[in-house]
Length: 488
Image (tube, rainbow, N blue to C red):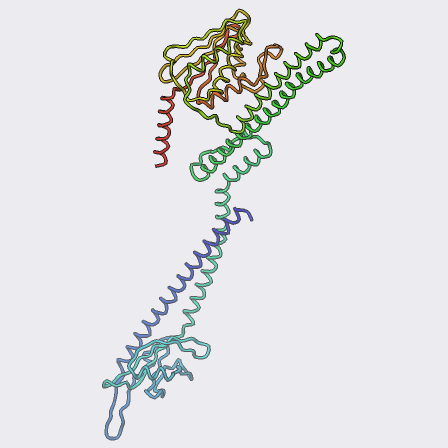
């Protein structure tokens, strides 16, 4: 059953119930009004007859008797008059009763003897008669009972006609109401049908870029459209992230396979070479072993980098502690000098950075700086220069690694932090392509910011900005206070 049909049925039921209640109220009120009017008419006629009653006697030779006027004088068309004494004996009646009499029960006689005036319904043959019973009183004594009655058939016929008219009117209004309800349900659900069609089209075409037009709706339908569009935004974002994740995973597997294939091929080739010529030519065996050691070292570094990134993907959090920046920079500088035999390397540590501490992990901090320095040294030609510098201003420390090497093209800067991305894969100095991805993750874990400025053939500047311990504690305190205020 469609929603439109359900709404139409509900609307028709409400209209039907309303009309039925209305018809019952009208019929009941009119029936009551007609009976009340008939009762007033019967009471008025009974009063006229009762005022003409006379009582004679008692005397020496006659008992007390009631002298009645000619009841036909008070007769009305379709109105019956009848007088009985207190024993129920008929005394007089109107001529239109012919051979019939109005029924008289013992209860009616007893109530009338007690002086009660009341109405009752009597059934005379096939006629239903409304009767007014009026006790005739003489000298404070009930001497007879006057009955004034009128058949209810005429009024009942009018009520029957009214009932049929009400049924016909109600039936017609129900049909009209159902038609209007169907049209209103169609008009009300038309925007819902448009929403459904658009959603179905999105499902069939798998076009998550498409949105449901809101139109001029500012009601519940507008809220529904906004909710569905927000859901589509989330689905599109999730689908895009999932697609990017799958693409990155495929690229990761492909790159890992490629990166492992090369050293494994080299190792296998050198092993074959040693098998063939190693015993006869010790120099060849030595060179082969050196190549194998180099490739094993490269594979070890690749696996180590992959483990770091696997930890990052698993949500690993680096524990932080206060660390003196100047001490870490000096240690890193000593290691960098051993890597930069062909380039001019120097450390510039501002005096304002002495004894300044940041929240960091010493090992990961050294790894971050060595990754950046290693890249700078690799992509700087001999006789070039590489500088490690630190500047402290406004509660933060800027650590810069600068060089005058080959630089980075502007179109590639946004990709250098991707996994296995290398600027020049043909260069023998290139690494695994995971270093900068690891550096980016370490930076995020330290709450720092890593920025790059570079020009092709002009060199590059990598800047890592750390908040100092005091500044970071203040920020954390503010965040905790804001969080407490929101909860409160």
